[in-house]
Image (cartoon, rainbow, N blue to C red; front, side, top):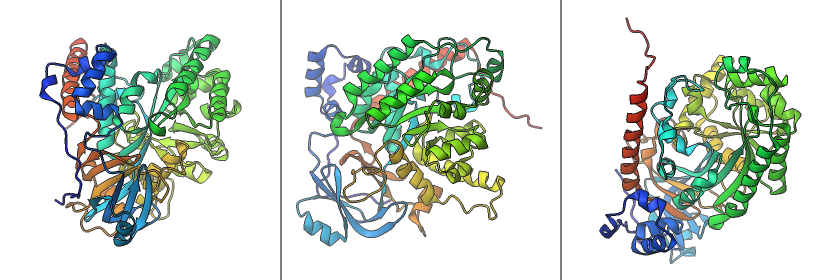
Length: 527
């Protein structure tokens, strides 16, 4: 297997043994600002994380990837160099010319490598990794009827520990930008900022008093009595959270952190909330998001209690539009597809989770109607790399079902890579800065080791990677011009310590869950 060589390699740093008596939870919880500052001075690794990923030996201001392949959805350039200066891509061209223009640059040997744009995850719930290996297999909403929710057993800073696990997974699988969509997202804002990822913090709000969302079963949709009640106080509280988060975090970490407003769910949003969220986004030149048509129960509830399907409800209250990226669209009908397309609404397609739920959204019809497509992960996993393959295969199956004359022609891997990069950049309102490797854009990129048994030979490297590659092919990840992973070592977090503690927490939680209610797995009957 080929390895990368650099004239100025970044040394790895281990946590000092002198801090071994501190548990990671004690570190996360902290013991006062003075103690935290002292620990940061004594622990180079944690100091690196707190300072945005700079290790004690600084990365050079200019890095040139030499003799490499630059793979964009629309063009692949072989045997070129790419220069990163500061946080921007400064040059792409013949290696000797680029090196002559940047004679003092750190060189990253790109032979046997390919550079790809960083992947953009437009829909994540990072704390939900606590339910990994369970939530994927019991439908939506989950039908296992556990006596105790795994998330309810997280203690203290363990929620942020789950976020760190999710961030590690995101980085090592090629994500450079992630949209974390939840309520009270400020809880994990600092942890996400420290990870080195480019983050959109999407604060989800709701103002219903008597609708438990998401509506969990079709029987609940039918049996809910009365009229949905909405609270002005809940709306005001939610908009204040958005405003406070925006004031504190938007533009932080040299612009790496953004804040978007979000309506949590269609069924828990009043017309006034929808208008307030959109108005905030337009006032501050932001995107905004919502869960849309994610279950049969949702659309049945909306028809029963509002006389409109979910997309029609959003259209009636002027929520659709090109700033909106709506998650899922699993159960939209033809009329809803037309509304989404005419409005230019972006669809965030969580192909892996949709497949887990046994549903294949009408992505071909949404594309034809005019909806840009982006990709996301949803719960439990944060691996957009694998989502690309699932998105490609399930859309081909859908197109075959819908009557494509020659099955298996569309979409092409280049189309799916475009969804994961350019579509995501459009959703996070940064199409001029992200999504492709071009001079003047942000240096958010992946270094893929192409000398792998499953990637050689390759007629088209993008096709080979989407069909045959896996995240372990990614050897380095750069965000905003800084390596967050180099030679498969994450530089912004102590991965070993995080994983050890997360494993211990997970074993404790799942032991309690299964003791309270043994899990009945609905296996197939075998003759």
